[in-house]
Length: 339
Image (cartoon, rainbow, N blue to C red; front, side, top):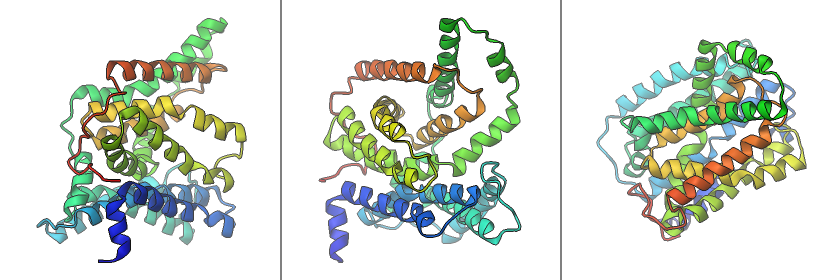
């Protein structure tokens, strides 16, 4: 047995963060070495690099429980091929990419993105016990309807409510905001949501952050402490994007990201525990967080601050109603760790 494999098995949480950061940061550093003047290239490098957490989790889960399951290889190859064909058009025609189909580099990067998404999804049917344990809940759709409702509705409702409160408090007219709501095209909104769901972040991150790291952290700490630890690394993971030009370099924005991460990460932890560790619900919630700010009308002047306050209130309610200061048994069977 290689010594590094033994170290990974002894310290899976540390190994997860190190490998996840290494994969993402190495890919995200490409624009520092190779100038990428095309926004489409920058976006593709960003979302491909975001697979670091998921790939790290899959790798370590395989090392922790390497036993094999009798799953016909051809079935997984077929599943992968079908998913790749479904996901590739979303990558090719994502308006935010705005690339040229005649550009071979653009086509290659889109194909890599679609292949990685298909790979992560098909890990539900992995031949390895550890990986299947990690990803199983992503394919289990029989979850209480209330969690689907929460995952899909809470974030847009908070966005709308924050703008409504701002308009009421300032005495401004609702006409502009209402016209913005009326201009929403349902089909475009659905396509955008599924694009983000499949290639925009949720599948890249949640199998790692919540599928792998969170249950193991909750085995060691209570949900609040586990959320703070995970949230810090989650936010720190994004920092290189400020230096590569994907995010505008703004120190105030970087500081705000670290200050305001806690309410959001506590809500996600609460949802994870309440939905009994459903990766499907967490992926949908993540997609909702990323998609609805682009679907709904632009927030009013002070709506951002009001939104943060509403988020904080919701997090406090969940902390007290769920007694998140008390340590609890992690949901997944493979979450125990001697980190």
